[in-house]
Image 1: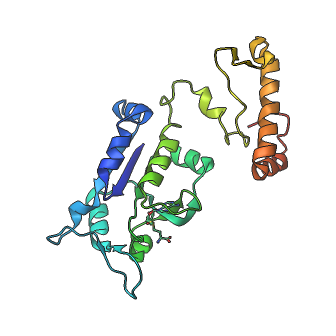
Image 2 (image 1 turned 90 degrees about the vertical axis):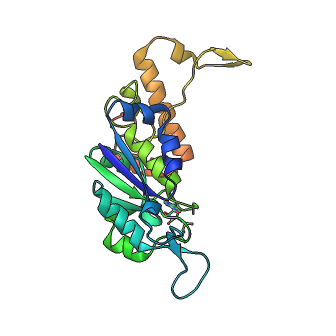
Length: 234
Ligand SMILES: C[S@@+](CC[C@H](N)C(=O)[O-])C[C@H]1O[C@@H](n2cnc3c(N)ncnc32)[C@H](O)[C@@H]1O
């Protein structure tokens, strides 16, 4: 899997990718993660990547020339997604879709966004991290990258952890506990210490269903519609 990220702040991307599971996935050759500095492709003396908007208005807009030049020089894996508040909302099913692919690329906007010719003629789609506005696409790119790379085979220590996590079965995850069994008078539920695997599984499913019902009625409704209630089916 190869993921290319186009940005004017490659050092932000590299700093993050140098830690934890992302660094491990990279050094093990599981994920070929590349960041590209758009500013290297600016041609004027000031290496400018932005200019004022036609028609007036606040802020600056990223110019198309350095972005097209960077993408054409690096020939990144497609699809190339523009990070944008107006894009398809990123979620676990999209992370799974991307993790099943050979690779993809992400373009981080800054300022008031990018010249629309980039969206139309250079990118293949748009992804949003949610209904809020960030200063730039880098945090969104890193969130997407992490959500995808952790799903790749041999990245997480325990492969069962990905299949049992929130959203994978349509439910939020059940509550987790570790030692000590009693902390400040709060005890871990007895069933989790019983050693009875069937009872533990039933308790976890009931907890996951109850949490989803009370915290995320939207997820709960689609889970109910799927007919999986009480079965734990994926
Ligand atoms: C300050 S934002 C531009 C917002 C734009 N003027 C608007 O109103 O939609 C700068 C860049 O941050 C990134 N960005 C901001 N919010 C985002 C979100 N929710 N999801 C993905 N990227 C986002 C995009 O790449 C965007 O081009």
